[in-house]
Image (tube, rainbow, N blue to C red; front, side):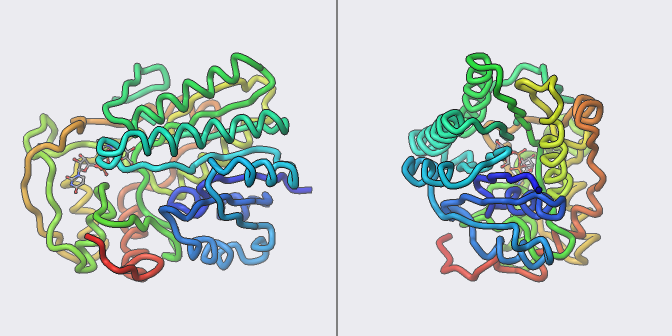
Length: 339
Ligand code: UD1
């Protein structure tokens, strides 16, 4: 009988790609998503891509802070593991509305952990932090970052209080790209905060130019360097983490999911222009507050202990990002523009 996995935030960008890989891997998946920041169409697309595995996917629309709904779900279904993605993730918005972020991300997580504890369930994956290894000191520069940090600390404390928990904390670097089919991908609402969704909107004519946040860094071309990881590789990293849970040695573990390679903003733009055949006009601007110069992962621990390694590079990332953009220039559903 296949293992049953609860995926919170499963209709979102990383969630939908992970749900697909889980279904293809033979798991049964229940998605809980408030659809606050995502579209249910992503799950319809996942069903199409999963073909024969599609009947193993079910969806419940509610917010994790809705205790009665969460209790009811756990009372009616037994889960072998939980993968938690649900949360808000816009840095700027988190500075403007810190309490909304603490409420959504931390109260949601507390509700989940409590209901899991009451029903004897297990896991968890939580998003991040040159090369950064899992022991590098972490600090957060904004409320969103702090919800990730506190989320990790809360999970570690829960494990310390009861060592029957098995918890894996996944620190993502920069998830980009889309499923090679072009059927699912990133579809942020409003003005994209992140580089690649912005680049893709310039390429399809929704925005005039990409603003370069800083051209005076001490990097090869002056722009910031990041570790861009293909979202399908990232999704597979979650499957590897789930497999690891059957290892009796697992208690509460942290793993980086990155590629170990640093790429500058200008290198990313050049790779995207090559993949799409589109010119991306650039506007130079000052540094974005809170941005680091260079961030990339140390991938050794995940390679060694999860037996997982990213397969795709920036050319495949840009090919798939463009394929998704070209097929879905306005994302899953044309919305009335609010920006
Ligand atoms: C950002 C968040 C991080 C979050 C991650 C994924 C900040 C400070 N960090 O990471 O907390 O986990 O997104 O949601 O916001 N860039 C431009 N022009 C743009 C957008 C970005 O030049 O319009 C540059 C940035 O300066 C940076 C690089 O592109 O050098 C990547 O930026 P982004 O995609 O926003 O990711 P991070 O800043 O690494």
